Picture 1 (cartoon, helix red, strand yellow):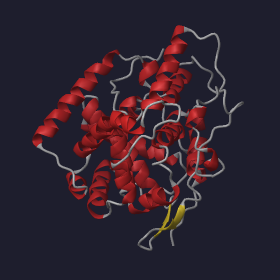
Picture 2 (cartoon, helix red, strand yellow):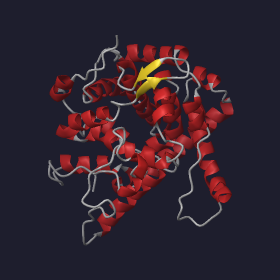
Picture 3 (cartoon, one colour):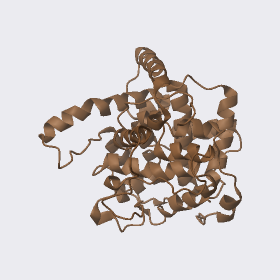
Picture 4 (cartoon, one colour):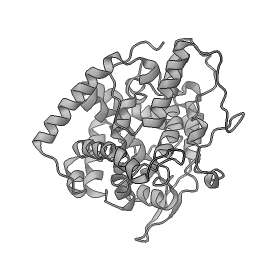
Length: 358
């Protein structure tokens, strides 16, 4: 029988990642949003995870909001310092009630250690792929360092460490074996490939026009995903990829890398990451309140009482606290937050190594 009890003591004893880690350098950058379709699809291909999404998620109803708000606590497990294990417990708690039986009669639970670790492994590979394609690449030593950091990061969740490979080589074997033997194209995966961005009610344009506006964005993300997929996964998904496509993706990645040299941290970094760097530099108090998702990303009203949804506590559900008066740097920071939260799936942003946060 599978044990899903969390190893809370392990999380409390583990050391959180810090500003000198490679994970801090890459994970909070908007470039990760360029692989939104890739990570959504590769996660959902895992049968238990895909079944949970099919039965419990409303991704088709609110794709941008659901992803963008979920990023805040997920980022927090990396960037929240001494509070990272608490954030990890919060994320773990969102999965308590996600369980059931899929169409083939297989039981699933989101807190099954193998299922939970697969989701984490995809975030680790997200960093590897973003760095490889859009940040100039990684050395073998850097990949090994990132592997060690991903283990340290995973301890913050307080989950069983049983599924976690012991070495980078073991992980590569685990990844290849899972892609070859376990992943499947299910409805949750197809929903990612066929994703549409619902038109907000306040946008005064015909829905067909809106859909045509966003179709190239989603198509571009599918194309990037096809290139990043392992060949066996790409073939299973029925996606075409040629040497010309590979060359074009590499050229695009280099252009993205160069373009991001001039982007300030206030815009380049996710708000949770940016404030983490500022706490580490002493520019914010170590116990300063954590940045939470803005109110317009909350789940629909009929879903807000459900335990699988992250809904931050605020003084007012309609008016989050805004510092005043806003300085030019504060306005840039707000602009960066808006870009991250609104366009995190839009494939509009890349990144480079960090400059000192303002």
